[in-house]
Image (cartoon, rainbow, N blue to C red):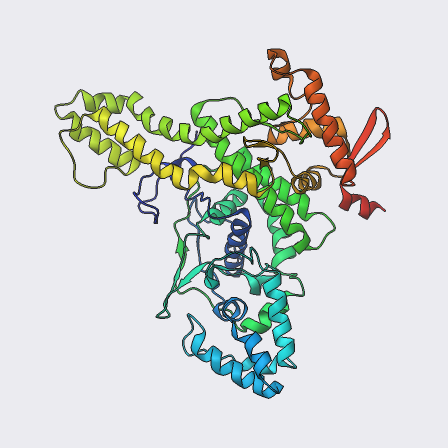
Length: 512
């Protein structure tokens, strides 16, 4: 495995600053940052780098440094503006409505020195028109019904004017970036795509579809925001631990296929988000199994049946096995230091404890405090494993569980155990990303297996069948249920009893 050099310093607000999760997967994967918020952070980075003339490019490994937009006027108007409804009820005329509303906003807007929204009167024919635009943007917001603070809510990314980072606006008016919902996972996504084999082709597609040809609704965000507001300090410190990885290329290929479809950019976004989530899950599991020297990752997927099946149990087992991999990788990453000549030399030295402390500090950034010279070296390793595991369980260890549910890969429906049970939404995205025009159903099943490790039909489940844990009929029925699901979604066409084709609906529409 490749592990790029650890940075001299890194930002961490989650507890003890070990360099363990970050060394394996990067700085950083975070479960509270959903796939949607990861995509928004990615677009924020992309646009900032586009302004500097280097979109989806790295001048040096892990040298990313960018200045995102804040757009505080826009987010105050859309998410910190409870006065519109009361003003419309109280005001007797349009002029009175504007005057009353401007007075209220002048004292309640957050994070803006001397807030002045008088420019809006020239941009809207009436106060009702202004209120209608706000209502539209509120209704199309990402995770709009969440109880997040107003400065951590986001309008739909219709274009450049609607992109901004997560911030914390304190009562005194100070503004600082927040790493809870924009936790750098979007930066990892940016670096993964920048290091992929498809970076050049993808760069043109992303810039042309999202930055240079924004949706008309981006004009609403522009009218509300006015001139862009940028962060005062550049954001640096992003770290991705390897220069290349199959997950980077697969992710970029999926996005490239989606962006080539004849659909509006904002209609493609949900598919991009889903494939980003799936590939980031695979990236985390792949790095873990590489460290553990395990076979390739697989997902036994149950196409939900009305009654409990063998496939359901195998799917739940598959889920649990994958869910444990990252934590096992943490322990392996730490304990392998004890197998090195360096560690053996430390134990054979005149002061084994002090030399062991030096090794642990150099390799993992621990211990960071008073040294206990009475602790035996192997006990220190045990303590580090325990503390690193506890830290891992807080956020990074929840990625597989949280994101699999978010993208529609896992479910507890009709079962006490969580298992892989793809939703209609995920199935449609898989067809959109993987099927160029049309593909025989059996070839589609094989493609999902080879590309993502999905085990659905009997051909892919051969190890289970040969081991006697399942019959061929169990997985044949599972595949038949998928065939029926795809047909009901308009994604499969049966020509005869022995010939069925999976069709990309957008490519079919273009051909027609």
